[in-house]
Each structure stands twice: as structure tokens, then as C-alpha cells.
Image (cartoon, rainbow, N blue to C red; front, side, top):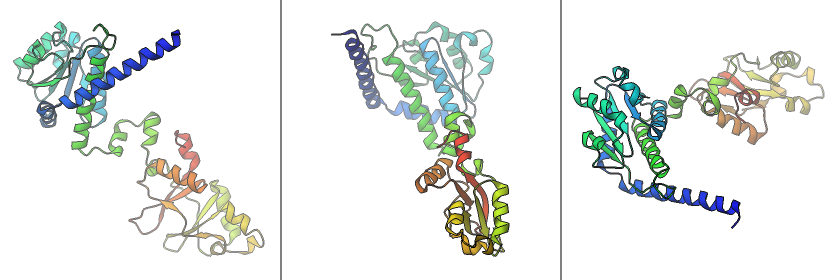
Amino acid sequence: MTDNESFLKTAKQVVIDEARALDVLADSLDDQFAEAVQMILQAPGRIIISGIGKSGHIGHKIAATLASTGTPAYFVHPAEASHGDLGMVSKGDVVVAISNSGEAPELVNLLAFTRRFGIPLIGLSSKPESTLMKQADVHLLIPSLGEACGFGMVPSISTTLTLAMGDALAIALMKYRDFKPEDFRAFHPGGKLGAQLSTVRDLMHADLPVVTVGTPMSEALLVMSQKSFGVVGVTDEAGRLMGIVTDGDLRRNMEGLLNRTTEEVMTSNPLTIAPNAMAEEAVAIMNDRKITSLFVVDPEGQGQAEGLLHIHDCLRVGLG
């Protein structure tokens, strides 16, 4: 066997072992998980996650996932907690302490603090008889299945299961609270993910290239040129969008164009999009129809154009 073949064999076995462990975890979930969710839902304060070593790294991620999905949470380092950061924990909070062995000495003072002041404690461990689980009010037990290294020393299966348990908690809470993509975007406005969660209203232009029905095409062309969108909207006297004039309409009506009016040239009943639609949906429509812009019209309104979304606006934030 070549080195490359050996590398791939090992990697595949790690993934297989961790996938099998996740199946065991799914089958092992019980009423204690539901109690943990209920405890968090009833808490008037925040969720404090704590753990040391690899459990701490996983704890940071769990806290971040909870916070970004509508459950206020933050990570408290257990060693720092013993040197003043216990002041960050108060009545009304819930503490989730993570330790695969359940015997991390750095957690001792935090556990004692929760017991002293009656702060609910959720233990996340693979050892049901450990100090952590004996102290905890609710037990999130992950199966003890060894580690992917084969000799139980490299946190791998255990950290995968811990992370999955945290994700399960966060998403169960998110589903219960009916947390929607627009809510998620409020906590995550930046980066590619923020762009994917942008609405049409977030990106559209409100300064519209519009003229009224009956406007000479000579005037419509001036508006079209000034706004630089390659399109002009045509409205009735009440401001309702009746049609659009695009570059394609101009090419199809070149003969005598300047002697015509907008309604003679425009495309009637144009494709539009709602302001609350996701920007990704608008990009899909523009790509499918091979167009570069969409007028924004509220379907529950009176038909007035509220904005204009151009494909360049979407590309600028990373969509497309």
C-alpha cells in the first residue's frame, strides 16, 4: 500500500467511525434533552457555556451558534471564572458545563457557584457517574465510544458528538421560537452568509427611472440615460407600474423611435419582485430570464414601484 492509499484509508475510517457514533447519539437522545431545552426556554437570563481544552473550543462554537439563532449565550472560561469571571454568571442564567470525563478540575469552582446560588446546571459529558453529572440538574449524555485514533487519546469522536449535541440544542430552540432567515440575518449581517440572507429591500434603489404613460420616447431616453440602469419604468397617473422600456425594446423599435410614446414601445405587465423577497431569489429570476434588473412592487400594495434591483447590486455583495 502506498503512502497516499494509507492516508486515504485512515481518513475514511475516521469519518466512518464518527458517522457511526452520530447514529448512536441520535438513538440515545431521551427526555433529558427535552428537559434541557425547556430549562433554557424558561430562563429569563442568558446561557453560559463553559469547558476546558477541546471541550472549551467546542463550547465556544456552541455559544456562538446559540447566540446567532436567537438564544442569548456566551462562553465563560472556567479558569478565568475562578479569578473573577464568576461575576458574569447570575440568577436567571443557565450554565452548560462541558467535560468529556466530567472530572475537569477547572470546572469545580463554577459548579460550586451554581449550586450555592441555585443557578440551573446542564452537564454535557460521556460519564454518567462523574462529578459533573452528579452535580448537574439535567444530563446531556454522549455515548462513550472511544476516539477515532484507536487508543482513546485524541479527542475526535467525543468532540464530534459534543458539537452535534450543541447543534441539536440550538436548532431545537430555534425551531421552537420560529426563528426565520430574516431573524438570523439580524445577528449575521456580514460575509457571504449575510449576503445570502439579504432581502430585495436591502439592496434595491429607491431613486427610480420612471416616466408616465404618454411620455415621448425622446424624454424617456433622457431619463433612461441619466439613471444608467438600462431600463425605464412606465407608470399611470396614479404611479402604478404599467410597463418598462429596455434596451431590447429600443432595438425592436428603432424605426421612428423618437416619434413614438412610451406605451407604443414598452413591454406591458413586466416581471417584478416583492421587496421582502430574498435577494437570491431575484438573482435566480434574472439569470433564468437573462435580464439585468427587476422593478420592485409590493404585491399587497396598489401596484406602485417601490424600487429597482440591478444585477450589479447583487454581484457587489457576493450574490450571483
